[in-house]
Structures are given as structure tokens and as C-alpha cells.
Length: 341
Ligand SMILES: [Zn+2]
Image (cartoon, rainbow, N blue to C red; front, side, top):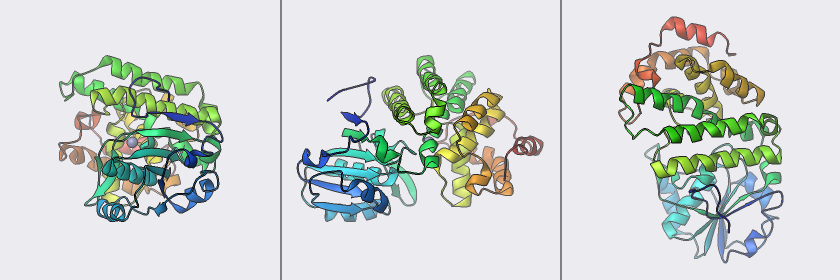
């Protein structure tokens, strides 16, 4: 067992092509929590025989609690797949107080390195419990079976440090930070983006190095955010635009793509090195254009018009540039003119 990078919730890890092989022989009686496609690509590599394979189609807490009732006795829960399968496995592991092994098959979201399980309660995602994978397995060959655009989307929640950290500084300058301000947290978070600059081609091409960089970026983010107990360096106005869109349009988005669009727009509202961060998103081929996510011009226009009242009506949302910088129709027309719809 190795520990890396200070405080993260990851107890141990195995990174590398073929690192999944035989894990099923080492973890006692185990249950696999997965979906169809991830199970197809991993079932013959895992080793051992699971007590049961639980297929997940929802992270609704009531649905999960029902599945939990029928879960056989076991020593380990193995989560294999994307965010939902991993979150469900985390939930079961937490509820049963048993060992967790996570095997992400795509790195589009960071569920596999966050301690809490994202479950849906009355249609809203809530983060519950506390889990630690032992080990977290990142098998590069398995990750590469997922569509490239989804793996590249994983960079969205790291590049959001660009706009979110600016928002935190901005809030602090207006005495609206809500948390003890930490220049070192911001400096360390920006260091994560600096590290990414150097290996953009590797992330674009989903090389071993590129996959590792995203995973380590997430883990470093945890070492910054877990001790201070909030993700303000990474979550700001770019996420709030997404929350508005999701609530009003009632449709899903690929997280990293819509966050990329949020970074594009909010870095411009902030007048915060917008060209620089846009170039990174272009170079890495992050699909942040509205056209690629079938987002209509009028819908996005309306979101931007509505954004200030949206955040002000939700006291849970932190103070950001949205709160007191004017978002005029002229500005919106201007900023949308270079996007493709
Ligand atoms: Zn996010």
C-alpha cells in the first residue's frame, strides 16, 4: 500500500495497463456494481467469481436502498464503470462498512477519487457518506475503451480552477468569501493547471501519461479541498451557469463539456485570461461548443440573462463574479458570437 500526494481518500492504488488483472482473487467474497458496457470489457480480466453482479441504472437513493437489501454477504464491493456505477459502489460500501475497490472505465468525472457518494434524493444529487478505495485501479487500456471525447471531458473539472479560484479571490476582495481565505490553496490549485499545460497533447491523445495526469490532478485537488472542507478553488461561476441550464432545460449534459462552456463564458465575464484558457480547451479538443452538446443559442442566451437572479435566489451558491458584474444583452451577443451553434 502506498500513500501519495498528502491527504486524499485513496488508501492504495494500482495504475498501469493490465493493472485490473486478477484483483478478483485478492479481495475475498465480492460483489460487482457496474453497467453493461463496463462489465463486458472487464469481466474476463477481473479473476475470481463475484457473489453477484449488480447492474445500476440509477443512483436514486430509494432504488439503491432496495438493491442493498438483496445484496449477498460479501467482504468487498467492486465498482466498475463511470460516475454512477462508482457512486453506487461507494454507497453500498459505506452502508455495509466493507472494503471498496473502484475501477473507473472512463475518467470523465472524478467520482472515483471523492469520498462521498453522489445519490439522487428527490431528484437532487446529494453527497453522502465517506469512502476510500483500496485499491483504486486505473487500467489505461480499459480507460481507452471509452470514447475519447468523454475521457477528455475529465479535464473540465480541473480547468474550472481557472475561473473558480478567480471567483474566490473576487469574493474575498468584496468580503464575501464565506470561508477563511487561503492563498496557498489557490496557489496549489493553480499549480494543477500549470502541470496540465505541459502535457496537453498527451491528454488529447489519451496516452498513459495523459490519463495519469488527469487522475493525479483530481487527487491533488482532493489534497487541497478535503482539509479545508470545500471545493471553492474548483467550483464557481462556471458551475453555476451549468446549474441554471440543467434546472431550466431539464436535460443532462456531459459534465466536462458544459463546464468547459462555463469556463469560456465566465472567464470572459471575469476578464480573466480568457484567450489563454480557451486555447488550452481548443488544444486539448474539449468539446465545449454549444453545437457539440446540442445547446441552442436562445436557451444559452436566456440562461445568461437569468443567471444573476438564479444565483441570488439560491443562498447556498457562493458569491462570484455573477453577483455584481453586469451581464447585459450586448455583452451576451458579443460573447456568443464566436461560439458555434
Ligand atoms: Zn464539476
